[in-house]
Amino acid sequence: MSRRAKVAIIMGSDSDVSTMNEAVKVLAEYGVTCDVRILSAHRSPEDTAKFAKSARSNGFSVIIAGAGGAAHLAGVVASYTTLPVIGVPMETKELKGIDSFLSTIQMPSGVPVATVAIGKAGAKNAGILALQILGITDKVIAKKLENLKRSLVESVRNKNRSRKSG
Ligand code: RP5
Image (spheres, protein in one colour):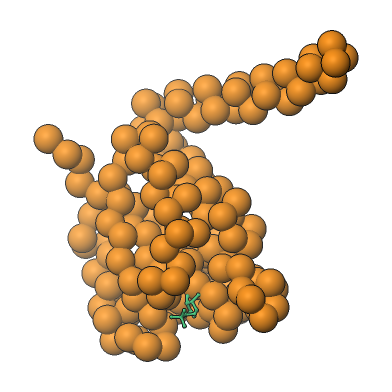
């Protein structure tokens, strides 16, 4: 039986899918299903508001929102919900994602968005951060995250070992 999606992954356009798939992948690795949908703060504002207002009652615990350019999606969603919202700034052709980054991170006092790095690294980290939030109460996820930390340490040590032996 599949577990109900705890994490919602939303994005402003289908052009964001390949970046946001990094978050989907990491959550899948931990057995966490997510609900993925395209919602735009500017092109479909009413649908976005409806989603955000009902996210908690629909069983979500965390929302990951990716958008590019004038990236208001995460902030708008955060304005309607008390769930944690993680914002992923898309890399853009014109300004390399600095536009998305500033639009996502620079929220006014009272409405936080946990903003991660621009692009695919940020999307992956958004997935990990969502897992860390779920891991506060889910011991299985917390245990797997400890393994991830250990594997990061090992990968750096291995690089030193191969440098010395090379
Ligand atoms: C944003 O505008 C989207 O999140 C996307 O990153 C950007 C460009 O969208 P498209 O014109 O490719 O649909 O709302």
